[in-house]
Image 1 (tube, rainbow, N blue to C red):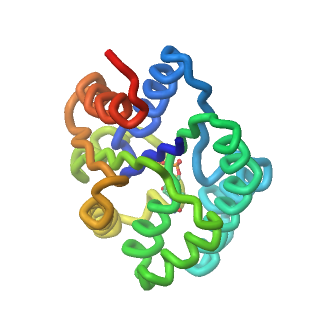
Image 2 (image 1 turned 45 degrees about the vertical axis):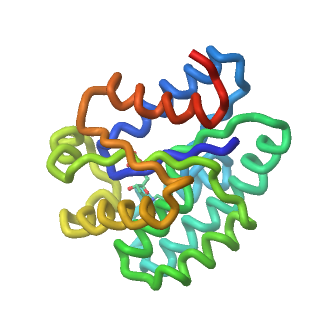
Length: 204
Ligand code: TYD
């Protein structure tokens, strides 16, 4: 079972990921939690370049660096773990590329989907949670956080990202679940766990 978490900065992904990991472990599951870009030595190096280097990176280079990091993570870590029956949780996956590089930076969406598919060797998440918060809430929650290169892309960019995630939710309603994440942590957690219980047949 492969579960991914998506949304803009400040949507609460990392907090919910930790809570879901704990819930699954408490229910006797073996879990591996990862983040993108990252999760292998190679991918963590690419992460550093993408988010914190002083290089000027063209949008084409940015796209392929995300995909290179992803290809490494999928082949070395995610696929082997899934083959062993481990539940893999990932903070972001290819939907981030569809939204940020596709809708955000303006690449053709069908082309992005083909490149995503190439990088993952066809691997798709079984379930994706899109934690949706307004731009205003996002800004309030991350007001004191130091922004990385992509987070510095401006309000217009993030409006596009939110709309893009909503498009993905309508395109793939069985996999891509929109969760309103404006409320408190417990509220959002309960909505997520309800869906995970059903999917994994975990009783109350
Ligand atoms: P991170 O610090 O993990 O941000 P967050 O906590 O918001 O997830 O940095 C990841 C950044 O990279 C984030 O701004 C989104 C961006 N990103 C893309 O633009 N494309 C991608 O394919 C991925 C995986 C991330």
